[in-house]
Length: 238
Ligand code: ATP
Image (cartoon, rainbow, N blue to C red):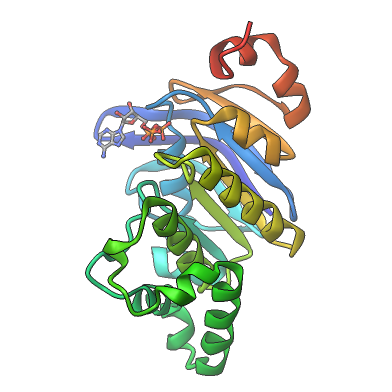
């Protein structure tokens, strides 16, 4: 579904991603794990059309996304839940969700948007209760749910999640991971970037371990969970 070949990403002269290749099959959850600054967010930015300077090949459903603007990439079926949620704090929960459906309104698919609003509020009932509230007044966990729900409003086939567990209490992280698994069971394909390697590997099919801009290890999630280097470096175990 997503195929990345020899991706190199640059910030001016600095190469932040140094020749990464990876692939995501339909219906999979894959995770990208690794320390701060390893290049995971940069890779997601390139996939979403948010990065000016990269080389290599990124194909989504067998078509290159090179040169596409972010709205075209969203329309093609890729949505990002960005690091730090990036919700529109002064706007209501409801308006944040409607903004997620921007590409749908362009198609004048008003009935579909209404249906999607219902479905995301079913997925996250708290958003229904809070729909008139400014999004900035939500708790961190609720804001993360809103960020996921907003991304779903664009009807993606591939969902990219950047650090959804960041700063959240363990119980809230559990809830978010449950939703991620549920979305996959409904047919969504997911790329999960996480510093919380244990949580990420537990819900993923496969994982890629990043270090300073390169993939240093990849495999089935179960294999990575059992790998002694991964255990030592990322899971805090001997
Ligand atoms: P994090 O979890 O902190 O987001 P990451 O693995 O996602 O880590 P990136 O954010 O992709 O890593 O950062 C990769 C490298 O690129 C780092 O060295 C970082 O300092 C650098 N970098 C990221 N954004 C920029 C930018 N806008 N300008 C210059 N350098 C950047």
